[in-house]
Length: 147
Image 1: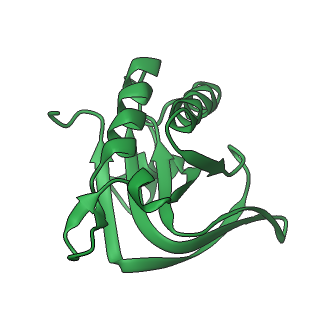
Image 2: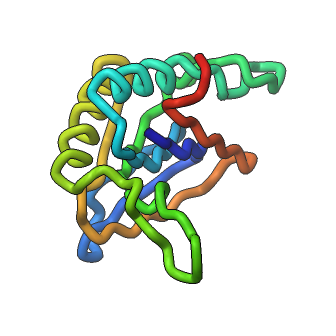
């Protein structure tokens, strides 16, 4: 599982030119699953992300988690995070199938919702996202990292 985390001042997700979800200060998550991912992996990643101390404290040090800053999450499925370039065209052979990814995405978000305020996009939809990246601050978190 791979998640790109961006700290945002605001984020808005549109589907068919209509606002579907929006958040104020918090995290924009771009979420992708690979062939070996399971519910256990998704749960661990949700817990890890909820507890990450990546927000600045009163001294500007990255010392606070998202709940400590009353932040929200906008979670968006993005299968292209596992795209690989062996030539000029991307290959998606390491991406978990659509149905399995959709189920894990829903499960991941349900686990996040146990700890955080979470809004989502619609799996498989053509979505447009606009956001203001703070910093800019961006992290890439992988499930196979040593914890």
